[in-house]
View 1 (cartoon, rainbow, N blue to C red):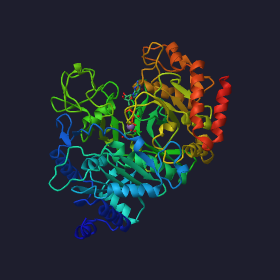
View 2 (tube, helix red, strand yellow):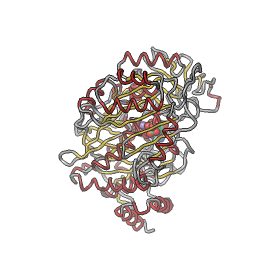
View 3 (tube, rainbow, N blue to C red):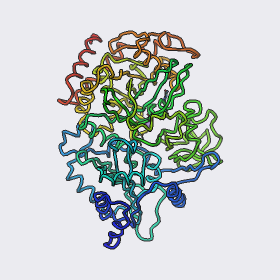
View 4 (cartoon, rainbow, N blue to C red):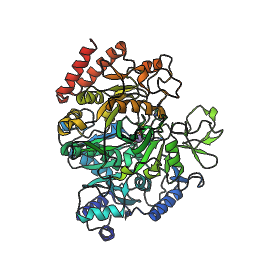
Length: 609
Ligand SMILES: Nc1nc2c(ncn2[C@@H]2O[C@H](COP(=O)(O)OP(=O)(O)OP(=O)(O)O)[C@@H](O)[C@H]2O)c(=O)[nH]1
Ligand SMILES: O=C([O-])CC(=O)C(=O)O
Ligand SMILES: [Mn+2]
């Protein structure tokens, strides 16, 4: 950027926040955009950016009657998911990144990034997005500023986080700390050259400096790689803040349930990506008299409240949900939210009348579609019409069942924590932990078959502690120790009960052992009844599982014997599981908390292994 346009940056900066202005200038000097634009977050601005994106071919307007103010985007086929192999935690000491993260020396990485980002925004606009994760009226609002050369990122960030002028005003009032987050698609445009609809670079770098609390993202325009308030800030960086300050930043939904007696319970649940968080967060209970309300579908920041209770806040403002499998029969609440419009769909298929479609959206499959790659598609095509990780991005306040407490800066008390994964075998439908530390053991050994939410092979069993494997911003053993230490900081009478769940177990015949979706309310009912001391359970080596008749099956074509199949603790399967857990724990080396090693030994003993 020339000196005169450098001057422009300062003059155009609509804020007195000196550190922010200085940082924006520094990034502009490095990345050399044609212009710097400060995002105000208004509807008018959003409409203008959307029109520009339509003209550029990045967004396709949808049928306005069916999907008002909504658009479809199609990414480069090589830019469809988070890239975990290209994600780095650059702590000062390698040890502090732990074995679950890629690490590079911070100085070396900065040199690398300086090379990558030099001139990377040439020919583009650099957008400055002030944002806050969580309510702006929180006691300590958690600010961030993302600079990006992607207008698609701006329009998506506007749905996913609270952004714009109000945030900037509050931030500058106290010269507040903010997490600086730099994003570039990594494709400068030379003079006279045309842009492509979805610019991205084959070389991708998603980098975090935990001590500095800063984020640099290069080469991708997709979801968790580019919307830096989400996984990069609210999980990786926030988990480090949480460790230092005594709270928890977790990959969890939050759901409020009210029983027929009018008593409410808030349930937080950690499932790996594409394993059912958004679906459970929008649960439609199939049991009489129970009411469900949504608080969050992906991220939960939990602090210890004044009475020693755990309180959860959803720091996000929208849903970035997996489209395939979200349908009128499985998740009508999501479908109703989407139908209100104001959404961006990425990598879904298009219907001939300008609507969207994906596998599982409707029972009837359309006779003709344009698939996510732009090709003609018919049911005979023999390939999915929508990408398996295609997403809908929708404002959270369009959810009819959103709890008013979503807006509360103090959050809600969490009464139960679920850890869950996608396992065909071994893991029962639901198991209640014997104690807090036993629950941490369950979380620490959580496992799931991999999905399309991350690049790489699908269907491979991997351990995913607390569903945070790709998101823990520090040493994984320290992270488990931090979880374990919460017990001593909290009021023991108010600690949530912990449960391990698995909606994905198969019967010996190969079908799902449990119907899932709305019927998961029956499992939650059992869990809440356990908290109230009302439900029966059988003690097993791994914890307490429901007796066949303790799950409410009213109106369901299932018998207590079927429940027994779903909750079976099979000695042979557990022998294999123990060996696999032992292998997993060995990776932690010295940083595995002794309390968890004791839990493992106890389990081994109870299993008679
Ligand atoms: N069989 C079965 N499938 C489910 C259930 N809940 C969700 N799914 C499927 O799991 C997939 C992912 O569900 P989501 O709720 O979007 O997953 P998520 O955890 O929010 O995913 P991320 O947004 O990637 O973090 C979809 O294809 C769902 O149809 C269930 O109870 N049973
Ligand atoms: O981060 C993303 O791209 C989408 C998401 O919610 C996840 O993968 O958990
Ligand atoms: Mn999700």
